[in-house]
Length: 140
Ligand code: 5GP
Ligand code: ZN
Image 1 (spheres, helix red, strand yellow):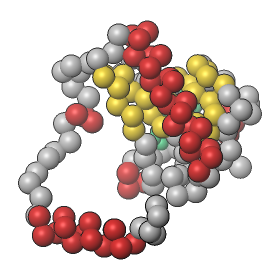
Image 2 (cartoon, rainbow, N blue to C red):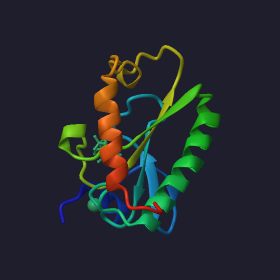
Image 3 (cartoon, rainbow, N blue to C red):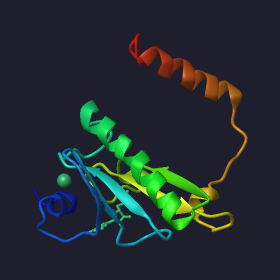
Image 4 (cartoon, rainbow, N blue to C red):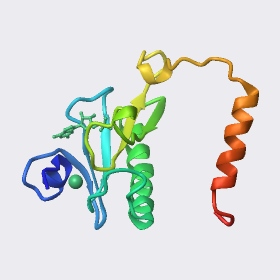
């Protein structure tokens, strides 16, 4: 498979690793959105949140917490954005599940802070919520 993150995991291409566990690795992003931007990646290939097994997801989010705390301390970050994209429409570029850790500082001007917020249509919001609740299996 021609997956850039699988190649990093297999050691075929280099990466600046910060964590290497049984199920998960974390490495620095080569195009950092802010100082300290890193990616936490399950070793087993899964394209997105719909495909990743729960056990890998749990291990990945656990590693996110560890890495987020570490980079926050080391860089004195004032906040951390945790970001995860699924599908082209959400701007996912690399089709191997990963979670971004993006250290943040007040007024750093990153676009994730400036998403447009506009007043919603309460009827539509409630209708979507009703359908979603119906779809979610009971006991979840
Ligand atoms: P996404 O798929 O969530 O949009 O983002 C993919 C991320 O992977 C980008 O932030 C990009 O800079 C990073 N990336 C892409 N290729 C490589 C690579 O070969 N090495 C590293 N370290 N990061 C990469
Ligand atoms: Zn992969």
